[in-house]
Image 1 (cartoon, helix red, strand yellow):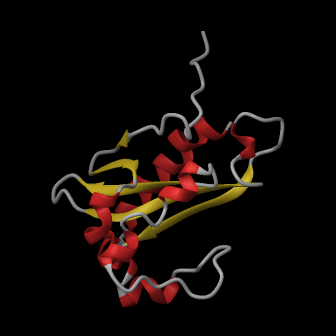
Image 2 (tube, rainbow, N blue to C red; image 1 turned 120 degrees about the vertical axis):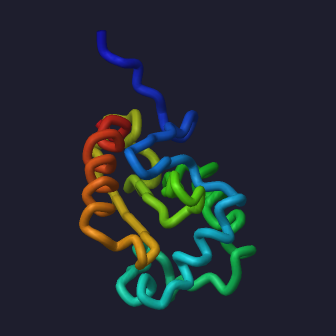
Length: 144
């Protein structure tokens, strides 16, 4: 029997790998994520997909509810990547379906943006492999 598919905008799944937990971003992650989104090394190679101008939050407060409205509007999903050892959020994974949110259970082909933002100190081959494997397997299940 095929597993029942759950719309991630109705119930956002939580994932785990050996070193990380991935769950819907929330205001408690703001301080940790500000370290990522204000890291000069990370910012140098981060792009701003579909964002007008250069997005650069001035404080953790700007991140507290930065993505909540877009999730409620079913525009995109953003998971915090939490390091199990430190308990800190070290980056995010985003799925932005185009047109906004419509193809999760519609008849349209799955087209969109899959994005990874990661604190530069974690930019290591073993970390990328662990995260990309999750993105390629578990996240693909909610898309197809």
